[in-house]
Amino acid sequence: MNKYESMVIINSEISDEGIKALIQKFETLINTDGKVESIQELGRKKLAYLIKKQKEGFYVLFNFEANPTLITELERVYKITDEVIKYIVIRKEV
Image 1 (cartoon, rainbow, N blue to C red):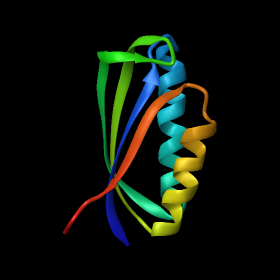
Image 2 (image 1 turned 120 degrees about the vertical axis):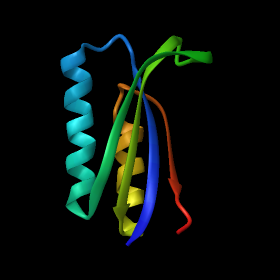
Image 3 (image 1 turned 90 degrees about the vertical axis):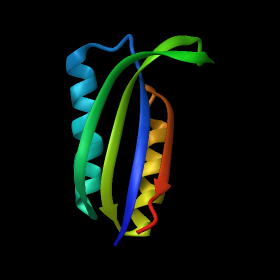
Image 4 (image 1 turned 45 degrees about the vertical axis):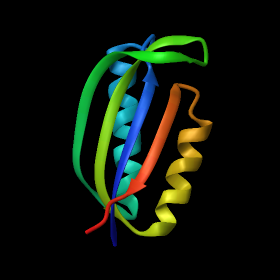
């Protein structure tokens, strides 16, 4: 398994319960074929530029271990989740 880091920006207009539900959804998905090491909720921050007509977003950072096949599925779920404004998944060098 490889180590990865994923930053997700969630629409800030969603309620706190909705944000918690999304974080739980992504954590469950990662744990199906990997292991979440840490989740950092960085909170609401102003975006440098408008993304999908949004001025600010809720930032969440996931650190996890997973098989490379999981990354494709994780990115697919990020893409089809309307509340996700932007995301990136990076493989960490060990």
